[in-house]
Picture 1 (cartoon, rainbow, N blue to C red):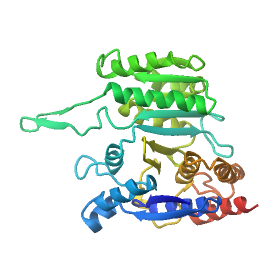
Picture 2 (picture 1 turned 90 degrees about the vertical axis):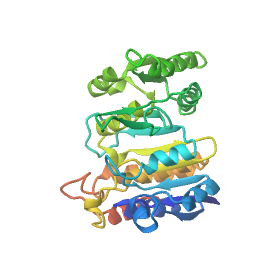
Picture 3 (picture 1 turned 135 degrees about the vertical axis):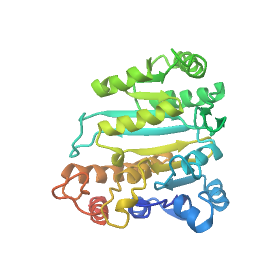
Picture 4 (picture 1 turned 60 degrees about the horizontal axis):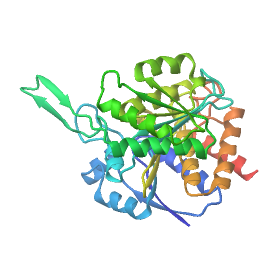
Length: 336
């Protein structure tokens, strides 16, 4: 039996997480779900957006799945997502973006994966003011160890999943040390994988190339900030963040998540799209060796999306259904 911590998060989190747990349970994998709290509501209720009890639970289970957690903009507590990644050394953020039949998108058939370095760069929270808040400084840190392990993960992912190419995205023309270190590591590592084509792109050019012709790419690996931006950009190419799952992978702990926001304006209205976190649950099943069950769930989700009649209104504005109805449709497909 798998023991999995779950974090409902904020806003629409509880409703979409309820959907995901029902569907994962229906896969046939026996799971003991252990509730953990994090996010803005946890901060309100418990005085801490990421309580020590939650960290202890995840440290014990070594597996977690989470809904979206609100992060205050410009002030307030630091991102729960960043804190979890740094606490458990979840160095690789894996974000598949895949175009689904039945979903209107810019690039039908697109299938990309972004592997983002998850613990360093400009997300280390090393910031300070100069003078009377006349200027602000942020310090980015990339280590050779950090760059090596995320690049290794990208190449190993490509091998394990039958991918053909890895593209390293950087800004080494300007950030010659910070980004140059990453490019050097990626270039050297590519020599260890002669069967995987390797190339690199400067981040601004990469953004343009993704909009013009994303089909030329396969697996993308980048540093924390650039990977964050690229993974949202690629999600936009296939229909939005509601269709994009994420996995945060470390040596001992893995946390799977919906990558979109908490959308408090639609919380409790039974209209939130649960697809992202359901797909994250599929990633969890595959990560734990339950490939057959993961495929069953994926087939059910794909069938419901392709039919387009029992999906939420963001996917079918004219005839969309609620979160619960979409969940029931997927469960019915699983039972067929």
